[in-house]
Length: 282
Image (tube, rainbow, N blue to C red; front, side, top):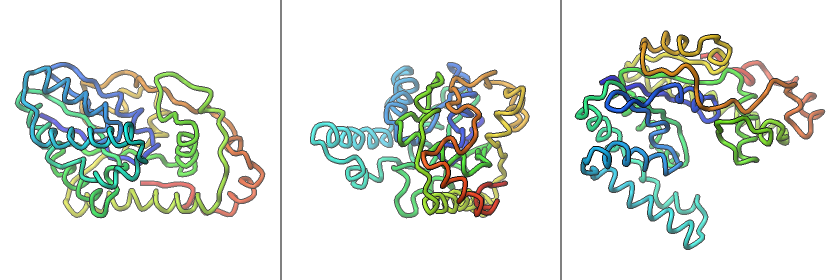
């Protein structure tokens, strides 16, 4: 079985990309963000693979379910802040989950397994993220590094998602597109530095463990006329790739200053930034 993992930073088009990969019963499975903080996605993994095939849930998933139920009860019943509860349950994601799931798919004779890995609230503890990157990369046949060249676009996308609560959608939503955020120069500088280091750290890990990877740039993917072929050529796979993603782009082309409430301040301050702070080229 071929395992393809996409490693990305939030708001870089990874959801758009991962939704090109097809789930076909007994042939290929797309687990989306395997360790994502949207818990129903992981329940779908259990339902579609373990329940459907009458396979016992491994102990790694039982541990996850116990901790997920605890988190949900604390947040919904006891009204405790999510971040506070997560700090108590930072080990809800365990490395054995990906091992068990991969072995289960192999036992069912699947040909391809797709998933993505993003540093989220469950993977932010000290030393956790590098361990997951290393472990998942070592067990993958193909590693995709998905990134967005425009750091500014990534920043705007994240702040809009935080403000509107719209993180993805199958249909275009004007509420997201026309949302205006407040430009904060120091906030952007911090974001830019962290974004660059995020990818450099991943590449250092891959270099250390001597794993090859392919790069899929979001802007190039969006501009390609045949996205299916573009992806296929990148990962050397000619099946289980859909012609289109079922995730819609939420932004339309507009003057970038129109994304900010304080557009004059943005226009004045952005001129003083270096290209290396605004763009990343991997």
